[in-house]
Image (tube, rainbow, N blue to C red; front, side, top):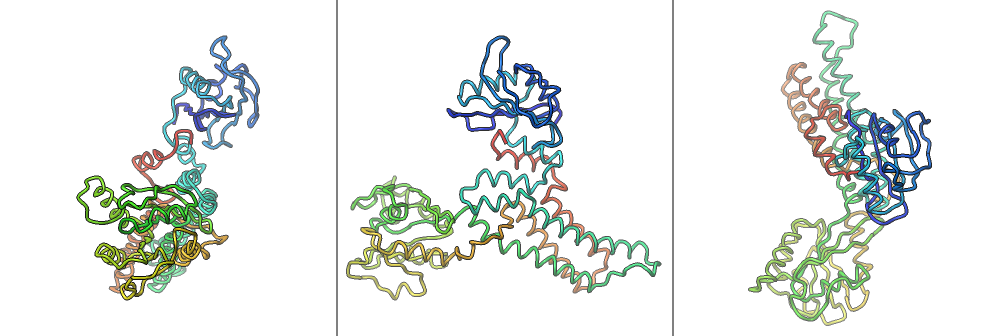
Length: 450
């Protein structure tokens, strides 16, 4: 934290502008060594025109932004060099900064410093990563709300309610002789714990919807060979992405694509036809297909309307019966030879991959299965981070212990231990307590310039 770090903050490549960010106590002095103007005494939040120089050699014509602590991203002195976008020029400026006293920033180190210096909490720091990686407008809105501290404020409110009851319990235990203090009753604890449980349970219940908004729906198209899986992928994507032939086993590896339905990303995977085969390459593709079925949020099981159900079809129907799935029957223009009694209680959509027949019906069925229309809401105050959700689930386990203790008339001081544990666990969500290994792992997933 005492050294001055630097990094390229924009994508390295040919472009109009490239930005190199510098943060730390020596930021102004170091940049002044290679800039045509002394920045040490300039006003904060100002932009300066000049040249980056290596001794007498001019490297680039630049604009330099100066932001003095504490009103900066890291709450340290920050300098951003806006140079012409080019790989060689950008690298040369970075090299000069390193030679004059900067250290190359680690992944996410600017955001890590923002957290350690108290500008943002840990939930907000994780929201920065979510914002960078958001691929839909809805995902962006969730990340923005997290960055603004909406989720943090919710956790802080829960901790505040907890500390009030904990404080009252401690006063009752330590000063039982005082008659004018509020006496905490078992009823009080039950009410507080129930309210907390309901709040945390609501967060968990909303998590699945939030993950769909943030990550999309992983959708696997499965079926035996030559039923039209690749054609269905192409129809959904509205492009010829997968190779289509009438030769069985054409698709031997997964082919992927993305579409948006009501602003939700649908990650579609066309899998290899599933059947028993002696072909080594095809068998690897079949194994991948089976693995994807287990990972997929939604399975589209494709059947051929013009042929009777095969053993492979029946096995796939059995494999997907307890999963979120849609049975998609292709070639609806041909005479049906399917035994529909085998498809009872299944979501069925008829399509024709030679045309667009049934594609909109399939999309509407996906919308209905996942309530996508209900996800179109102005309230994007979701908690989507896996680490945060795991901590909330820990709290719910502690609440179960408290409820059990209340039934067994456990003394107040013992119940207080579990209440304090919940308070500490909620604190770890926003970073009131943490360990260095957690921070290193968390910020290692960030890009270097952030």
